[in-house]
Image (tube, rainbow, N blue to C red; front, top):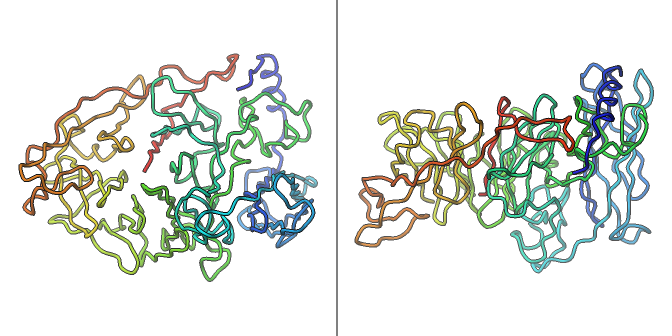
Length: 503
């Protein structure tokens, strides 16, 4: 990370505080691959913060735009760009400039996004990676739209910056500016700058951070300019770095929409009768590296369609996806029912009582595990769900909160542990571990780590799980200090914080 000088930062604050609010325009271009459609998105904001109106005109230095003029709806517009094979420059390493021009009452605003052309290899599944429209309309660990192998393989081409094995991430604001960063859930973890506001539906997918913005899914891509020194020299109409990061500043910390260069992952365009209706509403990775993309036909419709490669599964009724395997999605319905959604059926999980489950769930080799609250006992259990819809419970240690607060826990990745926020100071997270009961004498069959010893109780020992101890795994004692040299960057727990774990 580049260093700030205090004098320069103070000068920047004074200048920005005197600047009137100006309309802003952003243009982003998804990954451009030879002979494959890439999504071009524009977002316009008026000086008073309202969504921009009118039209945005687009030009490109290379390739073909599906539309050169976009009518703004809710301040946004979208079209496609294709770089046909055989066109001069449409080869790996080629550069494309897409320029957006928006005429406002205060003048013309112009922004340019520059992207590199890639020509991915042919996968060993038999097709060209990402051969589908809009990146395949859904990612399956390779953006191949299911047109090649359908599942990850040696020929997969995936953009975004690897997280270097991080199993659990903590995502949150870094203080009064809207800047959002994230860090691995370990003590003294290094912060990485990511977004100008909290990402929607974040997920760890093939060692990358995926998220949704404006109904489209992206992969976080590290930008050396994010949180870096101002590199544009003098002020140039409101953007301090010549438009490289394409966005307004937020408070004293000179960030320029750090997610502007993130790689396109998936969209739900063309999946509904109305071409403008499809929106990504959820991202659900699988244990094997696949990805289900949950689609809705409007911002408030909920997930009504799941895509993974060439597979389409209708949800019948909207539900919130919790976890998924390669062919089954575990979801929670608005009425509290827990569903197994697959083609061609939707099955209700069978339980002698109404289930009250948390949003934290994970797949196993033979089904799913979910954090479940039992109102009769006023305690949480580890709920084990089989692929056929059976449900059994494993009592959790007393170190787990003994009331509905226990539902606030999150699975610590694949480990047998739950993560809970620390109440009070210092802020952070503690981990509550548990050991599963010993297998019964008959050995049984294993069920994702819970032994199946017989039909009576699914093989779960009545004594429940053994307490494996509780300890702090993430702690913040020092607030962010943007005036330090170099700046101190930490997550501020006064604002919402989200935990993201591997599937």
